[in-house]
Length: 397
Image (tube, one colour):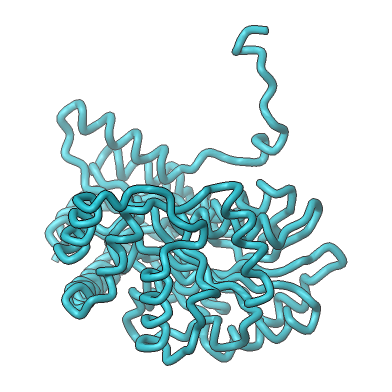
């Protein structure tokens, strides 16, 4: 049989292209032609790992600390993460409950492998990070996308969970702050959601990878509402280690063995060098650097939000975390207003600015909204806003 006749798995039919990455490919092609492009599409900090982390990685390499580790991570890192929960959240989390993973994506895959059975339904907001529904589908579950608009801060509410819970519902998958909206679930609402799910015997998974980048209030972890909540975190965003592929889970004590067994079989272990380097993330020196970078992100938010409003975008819920603005594009002065796909193509081709359409994040806002990433310099943000002002016939102040 020739390779072009090999049959692919049926589940691939339900996985749409990731438009964020498709636009990035188009932008790269334009750059090869000599165009200058301002990237406000991919959610990746323009900061990289700080010097303390680089020193720790170099030392690990020198000492030959490059072999397999335990599937749940090295003890020093699990203890450092537990210490972070104590100092940052005031929570006592046993290191044994912490499962270090090959990024938050691997963490979510593990959670779905352990908790989702064939035919199970998992509730999540629309809009939400597109890969989340595919993680569920990878284990033959089904994501149920619930339209969640500005009135709910683009997040699920407890009343929506109660309304949409059915006979096949197994749990909920949340993110706070969220990609693509940069909005958090208010603490009282999150507590009500956990209680509603618990009353129905389900699981609650909370993706908290952007909580280190919360600007307006100290975030509250889902772990505050019981040790039956599964939380996901990452070294990619606040800790600026995207390509190091390192994250973690905090899981209920009764599920530690199950998660370890699946991790052993699917991943063996996370990167050894990344783990040894990441211990240094929690040093006083590194945390001071991260807090300074967080302050820079806050300044970027203060720059981009009013600039987008001046251009005609509506921002019904201002972001309180991450580095995204989810903007309504229906009233901008352009022929493609209200068609986010065409509009983002015009912004790329005619203005040299990468912004992504809402179609990645769910059908309810697919055409009406765009996601703007401010994970780039203030100079780049100012240049992008100037170019878009020209595109929309505005005077940029």
